[in-house]
Length: 83
Image (cartoon, rainbow, N blue to C red; front, top):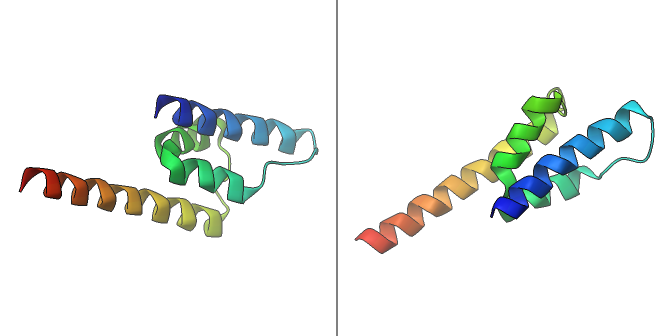
């Protein structure tokens, strides 16, 4: 899990650097997949640290949806384990 968060954070750093250099960027779908696979905290940290993808509302909504699904899955898993 830590590796996914580090990879997600690094992807935001690389994408921001690529954007500044006007080079080929990391696809938004790749950033979202990293978050979906468990790197949401790293994605949020990367967005904040690099002020990246903060005004892209469709992307922000999708990232929030991914995080909400993960919280729901964790809640469901906890419920099933503790009932």
